[in-house]
Image (tube, rainbow, N blue to C red):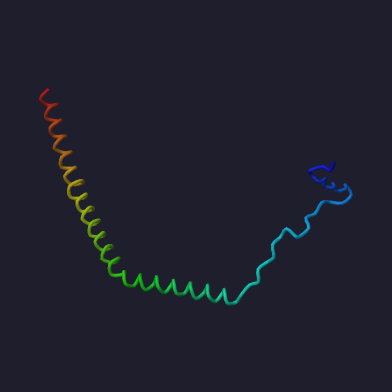
Length: 104
């Protein structure tokens, strides 16, 4: 009766076990055509983005200007109401506390 599994010969210890072929894949050949296509695609994308940026330029400037106006209003509001009125209210509170201390 023959065995169901064929015996695999074990390598001898005097030589290392090596794969039958090189483990490194072959290096693909570089192509000038692929480089040209990649450069052309990149240039087309760049020009398209520049065209979009040029068309959106006035909109970006308008939004930026609007934000600057809102920031200027906020800073003016802070100095007018926050700083000036805060100082005014602080003086009034100090005067009222001083009057309460004088009455006691």
